[in-house]
Amino acid sequence: MRTIFFHGDRNKKQIAITFDDGPSSITFKILKVLKKENIPATFFIMGKKVNNNKKVLKQMIKQGCEIGNHTYNHTDLNFKSSKVIRTELLDTDRKLGDINIKTKIMRCPHFRFDSKAVSVIKKLKKMMIFVDIDSLDWIKILPMKFIIFFVLIRVRNGSIIGFHDYLEGIGDNKRVVSIVRDVIRKLKKRGYTNWLLFLRCWSFNIIFNKSGNLMGYIFFYIIFF
Ligand SMILES: [Zn+2]
Image (cartoon, rainbow, N blue to C red; front, top):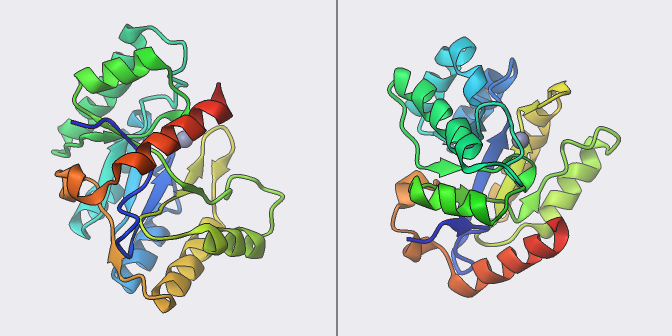
């Protein structure tokens, strides 16, 4: 089974909306927007936040969203021991398991990892989900209009867009509620009506394109190492 994914099928008019670092006090607001627009999204959450956010996590599942593992403490998985990597992921799984939520997908904090992390994640039979469109919503000085514009000019079939409902070390990312609402509405106008969920598309060969993944992997290696 393939482990690393950077985007979905480039031949399908299908997009994944993803959020990292939450849940936070604005996650319910995001869920409201998603509900109103009738679309699902994927939330990569931190294990340490599960206890205080059980209600919102259950709401995600209730309205058809899915939850991924973003480590327990938002730990950079680059140059870490196998034990640390396993603990970060399994402790989060355990917390989610306490409220009957299971997940097989994960996202590396800061998109950083090394070959050891890949082999641990492979052994845990998890899929590493990256993005091909970083919304840049974490850069405070960028105006909202620019963020929305810059997402929309880059997005294409199969894109995985990354937003944040929380910014680890900074706080709630309040403006993402209207950013996401705008992006979704504009994407719908462009004919994107199909939304990618990873856990529901377990047979990844159907949705992911081989050569694209390889190029993405090389690209990330060039950027981050
Ligand atoms: Zn993160």
